[in-house]
Length: 164
Image (cartoon, rainbow, N blue to C red; front, side, top):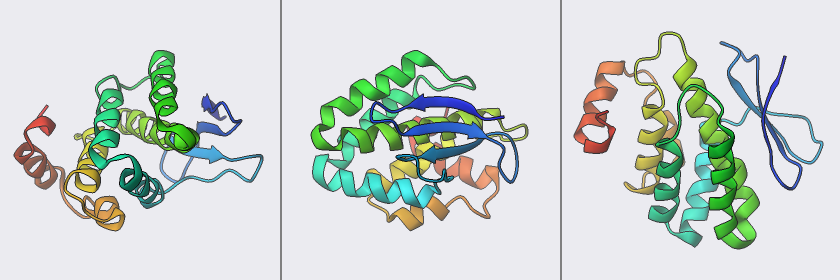
């Protein structure tokens, strides 16, 4: 059974439901269209484009505000904070609200994965590579695939803030 995470002010719906691997798959329903599970590359591409307009560092720093408050549970205060942050992006506020909420939900999913060791840090590494290191969405979305947690942990520890 689906768990509603957030209804974006324009009516878009973000929810958890059963996916291929577990019950923590994030789905988006836009304007009553069929729901879909957005791949990392989709929202990384959107955020990269928005970074060109609003500043990559700005989007990254706003993401980190949400990252710092993320744990294994949906938090209404954090969801409200995402909308407040998004409201500072003018005409792009809905797009920011959707994709930052999706990443937030993805981090919650990572925190709930039974055998995950790196948890939400994987999403932060992707966002850092995308927005600070200026890597492509494809690179950031696929970097961790096929690597062990130890290999990724070493990369993260080289980036001091990911060492927690």
